[in-house]
Length: 498
Image (tube, rainbow, N blue to C red; front, side, top):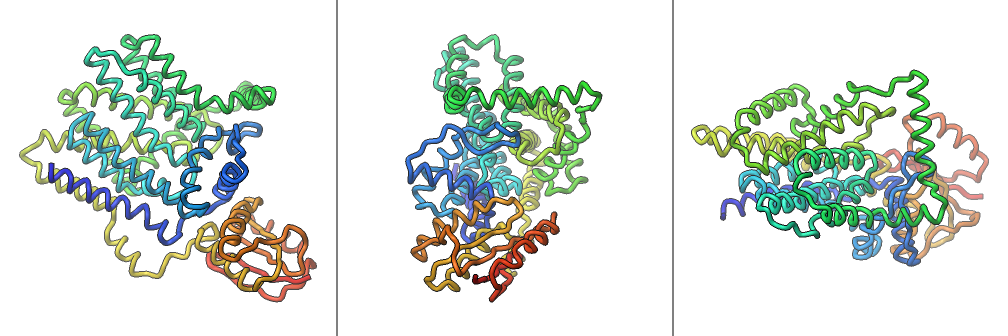
């Protein structure tokens, strides 16, 4: 047990450092979405305004639920509105995911599976990246590991022919609802995969009351949106039906929506990012080896290991088929939780090899260590610390703070206002930073009305440079430029007076 504790401690420290490093250096992304969400949380805290819906989705008239705002509220309060504190909460969620992974793996297949699962969760570059950004889909990995633990408790009780605690089903419903509420596309396909797995493996052993508990938990998460729908004449339902109708019309008109190659390539690229640091060849070799190992040791897998392995494969297959019908690009947040399933399958293969091939265990342990070193890439990590602090782009929180400090330094206590050009159009990031950082550190915020002193904050627009050119042309007579500076991240700050 001492070895297990030391190994887990090392994994915890490494995983924690890789996630907290960006918080310490303020190198996390502070984007349009983050500014919008923190403004909404600020309204909840300061105005005691409890919303029934959350941020918008990609479909007009369709919104996420408010749970992302509710979840952010405690960290927002503890950090007094400091975005760095909220970023720390996201990093902690990633660390907690790895630690819970040890508990889940240990309960399903033993200590070796627990350690391997936790190690890959802690050190996978994909998992580190997910925990380094404040964004609602990025809590899905934590919810999936919690869902796996609840499912484990249910499976064990059913195997022992015991009455299952209804609380497990209630929590499973809550977690599935939160996953759907965090990212609709991922949540919908994940739910379908879970339902199919339940029908195949557990339906004969589940009582009607269990379904009631599960549905109750799910409806509890959906209840704010249900109330919103009742108050607003089913706005979101009508928007969704309209979208489905237009998609169906497109398919009827002869436009094919089925594209399995696009779906497969998206999932395969994610596989290589998760287990092979984006190396396509190494990703193919690892997939072949893992498949061979699982077939070779399949008879030696326990019932629960087989169940969760099947669950992982069924859910992944549902994503492969479901995303083949998706008409647009397959964005990363549509498949944000799939790496958990990839890592679990990888962990079963590695742990079974370690447990059964005792004669070559030394070589297998060496291989696992090599895999973890490949994940960490210590040479790259050491070289990074020998270089100056990474500058980053205009979305980096540290760069935005530098712009704000420069503005207040030039204003020197005088009133001013500002105008922002940013590719997302809405300047939620600067609205929030001025409200929190400007008020806290300088004692006042920009005026809303016109002021003789004002600033233009100009972010680069590499994809559509003509829009920035036109925007500046429209403002060429808006005051006189007395100073222009290029800040870090490519941000340009113009000081103007009327």
